Amino acid sequence: MPRIGITLGDPRGIGPEVTAAALRDFIGLKPVLIGPKALGSVGRELEELGVWESVGEWEPGGGPRLAGELSAKAIERAVRLASDGELDGIVTAPISKAALHAAGYPFPGHTEFLQTLTGAAEVTMMMAAERTPIGGPLRLALLTAHMPLNDVPDALNVDLVTVKTRIAIDALRRWWGIPQPRVTFAGLNPHAGEGGLFGDEEQKVLAPAINKLSTDSKIELLGVFPGDTVFLQAIEGKADLVVTPYHDVGLAVLKTLARDEGVNVTAGLPFPRTSPDHGTAIDIAGTKSADPGAMRAAIDLCIRFCSASVSTQ
Image 1 (cartoon, one colour):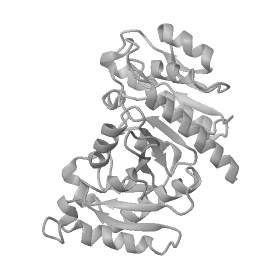
Image 2 (cartoon, one colour):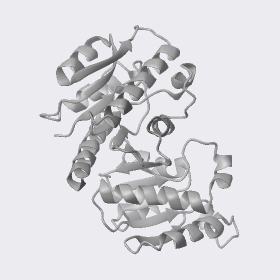
Image 3 (cartoon, helix red, strand yellow):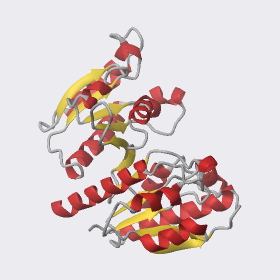
């Protein structure tokens, strides 16, 4: 069984309880649980399910600054353990970006924080649901992630599209075990620009990038398609990956179809990292009403990735 570390996320949120609920389904897994002490009954439950790695003391009723500090320390500890070879991969429970900032960590999310901690030259945020109600699986690569929508057109360029897509393709090969991925691209503009009538990023950025990617004969590039229909190719089993130009064009589809199965994957790190594709849900924390499905899927996928990484070494 791979050595998995799980950061418990914001102590005010549902991370600890969905972790506890999900771990009951993994017989024989004894993960390293990284987070603060004093999490009440769920903390005692977690102590029986894994090996505790404390990063400090949580004060019940504590504010955003303390929550952000403890969340960040857990991520830092997990990366250190993985970088030292003590963990094969990590799963991260949700954090609050506002709390992270209140504690003095200037990152828009896990992805950018992990990239900085590991020194990775470039990473790609991927989203995956290995099961969807109307087909599946659905896997996405985001060319841009946490930025205002009006900054996206200027951020897109041929090199960015090429590099981020190649990172995602490498993850498909190494972690998902897909040697010849079929890749399709979502256009930025309505109707994928309609030949330049509604915008020309498809012609000036995406098309040249696809041309550069075509030098790899072991990729099947399906082309650029309108964002309102491209996802059907994945759901119908015709594409292994949909490359999307910005955050919501992909996540709106994935979270609608597979809210409790979605997993965030950071491709480009030196080790696998997965996370449930939902937020802290502080408003329902402690009620035991949170669905642990996405955390269960994140743990399962991390185990799968770690096993694949070991087998290819």
